[in-house]
Length: 126
Image 1 (cartoon, rainbow, N blue to C red):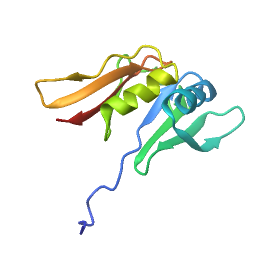
Image 2: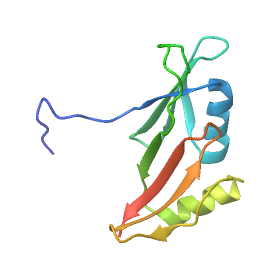
Image 3: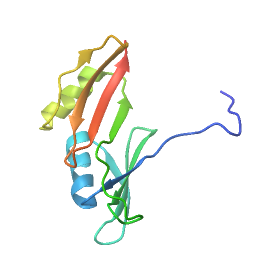
């Protein structure tokens, strides 16, 4: 596949959290992310990955700016098998999780609320 020089290659959102160490442990233990980078001790910035192209960055709230945590933030992950991912999370004891559902907009997905109150959606087109 040929790419235009101005095409984007991937996305890595930076999400502000009150406790980076607690957050990365939860994403590692509950959602199966790998910790690929941490900065400082105690940790106030970290990079987590799952698969080849899924990367999340977490920053201690207020570390880079004086902004407060957002009132509502959500991240949508496109997955290959919604039901298998849901089963994995349930088996790991993830709480605040909905049941996969088929939607009229052509997706099958479910939501998880993480330990910081962020909504994470996992889905696939039908």
